[in-house]
Image 1 (cartoon, rainbow, N blue to C red):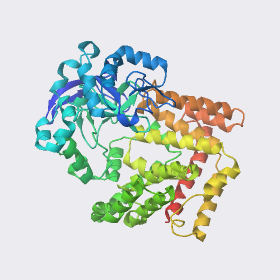
Image 2 (tube, rainbow, N blue to C red):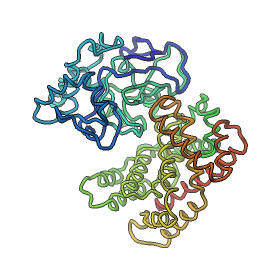
Image 3 (cartoon, rainbow, N blue to C red):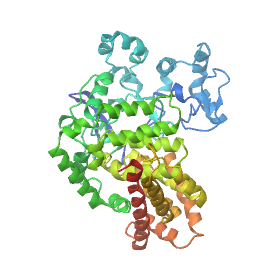
Image 4 (cartoon, one colour):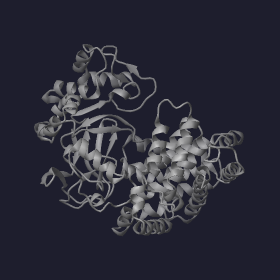
Length: 534
C-alpha cells in the first residue's frame, strides 16, 4: 500500500522512470510503501529473521505447518497467517526441501489474489522491464532464473537489508522499480520492518528525474560496468561513469554545489574537521590528476589474491585471515604512501579487517579500525552526512564505545595486547609494542562514556533524514540517548553540556565538550597507521 507518493511516472531515454512532483530537500520522503507486492525473507536468513516483521531476532520459532518460515512472536505468526501465509504454507508443505528464494518469490506472486495488492500497484507490474530476450540468449542463465524472469523479478526486485546493510530478503514494488539507475543517485531506498521508503539523498527539483543505484556505486568503474551489464543489461552513462570520477572528485563537486554544509556539517565538525577534509580531497585529486595510472593500478593481482585467500572458508583461524588482509593493505603502497585512502578496494579491505576483529571479539582494534574508516574513507565516499551507510557507521562506533566503556581497565589492556598488527603478522617487534602502548595511553585519555554520548548524538542528528523519525532504527538510537543521559546525570556536568549541544548546535559549552571528545577519537583513529605498519 502506498502511504506517501511524491512521484509521477515519466518516459525517459532509459524507458519508464520516476520524477518528483514537488521540490524535495535532502532526507525528505519521496515514496513510502507499507507491505509492497512482494516482501519475503531469503532462504539463508530464514532462521535469523522474522518472516513477518522482517527484523533480526534471537530464538525464532518455526511454523509447525511448513517448517520453513520462522517468527519472533505469536503475534507476528498470527498476522502473517491471516494476511497470506495460510495459502503459502500448504504449497511449501508439499515441497521436499526449502525452495530457493526465487522459486518461493514466484510461488508468493502466483498465490496472491487481487485483494492482496493494495494501493493501485497491481495493474501494471507486468509491464516492467524483465529483459527476457537477453536472458534467453544465455541458455544456462535462462534455466537458472527462468522463474524470476517470468515474474518480472530478475531485474526489478530489491534486496531487503537490515540497518547495517546486511541483505536478508527480497522486495518487489512496481512503483519503486520504475526508478532508474545512476552511480551518482539523488535518492536511496531504506527498509523498516514491512515498510520500504525512498528518501532524497540530494536536493531534487520539481519534475527532476529520481535515480537510485542498483549496485554498490563505490566500486571501481570496471566492476560497476560488469555488474550492470551482467544483471541489468545496460551500460551506465552517468557523469561518474562517463568521466570516471573518483570519490574525491565527487566530494568536491558536492561541496561546490552546497551539499554537506549548514547545521549538519557544523555538528560533524567535532569529529571531522571540514576545512581539513576539503584540503585532503584537493590534495588527493591533484595527485590523481598528475598520476592517472594510479586509478587503474589499485586492483593489482597480488591484492586480489590476498583478498581471495582471506575470504576462503577453510582458513584455519582468524589470525591467518587477518594476516592476509593486513598484507593486502601493504600491497597497495601507492595508495597508502600518498594517503589516498578512499579509492577502491582499500575501504573494503579496511572494513574486512574490522569484521575480522569483531569475529575475534577484539573490540578495541575494531573501534580504531571503524573510526579510521569513517574519518579517512566514508566522509569522501558518501559526501552527504545523512547517507545511511555513514549514519549506521556512527551508530556502530557509538555501540563499540559503549561496550568498551563497560570493560575494566584490565580487560581493555588485555584487548589491546591481543591486537594483531602488520608487524606481528611476521614477528614481534619493538614497533609493535610501541603501537600498543600508544593505543593504551590514548584510550586512557578518552572519557568513553562522553565519547559514546557525543557519537550517538551525531547518529541521532542524521538518522531522522536517513531512516525517518518513526523508524525502528531511530527508536533504537533514541533509546540509547535516554540511557546515556540517565548515566550522565550521576557523573557531573559533561553530560548536561552534551545534552544542551544536542538541542542547540551553537551551544558553546556543549561544542567545546564535544570537540574535546572528538579530538581524542581522531587521535585514536590515527593510530590505525601503526596497526597497518605505516
